[in-house]
Image (tube, rainbow, N blue to C red):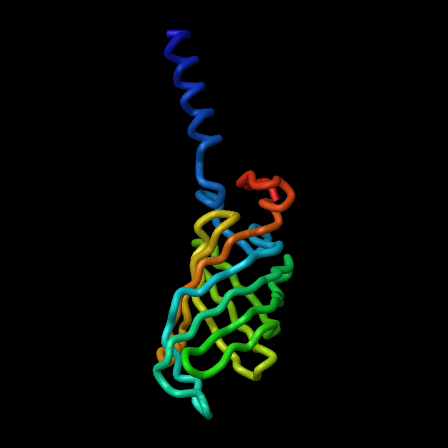
Length: 158
C-alpha cells in the first residue's frame, strides 16, 4: 500500500511539473510581458494609394509588451513590386483573455491602424493573424529575453 501511495505521489508530482506553462490557471498580459520578435508569413495586402493591390507583403520586427498591456516596437516591411520600409515604429495595446487568446491593436508610424488576433502557445511563443479581410497575413512571435539571457536555452522562468 505504501508503495502504491508513493508511486501515485511521484506520478502526481511529475504531472504537475510537466504541465504546460499556461494551462489550468488561465492567461494574462503579465504572463507575456517582455521582449519579443515576430516574422510574418507572406500575406496579401490591399493598402491602397500608390501601392498595387493584391501584392504580397511580409514583415519582421520587435515587440515590447509592458505588464499594463501597452506595447511598442519596430519592424521592416516589404510589399512586392512596391517598396521596402525599414524601421517602421508602432505603439498600441494588447488584451489577453483567460483562455489564452487575445487581440493586439496598434498604429504604425506610416499611419495605418490595425487589429490582430493572437493565441498564446506558451510563455515564449504566440501565433497571430490579421483581422482585416483586405490585408491577410499570419505571424509567429517568439520571446527573445529568455533566449538571450539563457544563451540559447529555452526557458519559461521570465
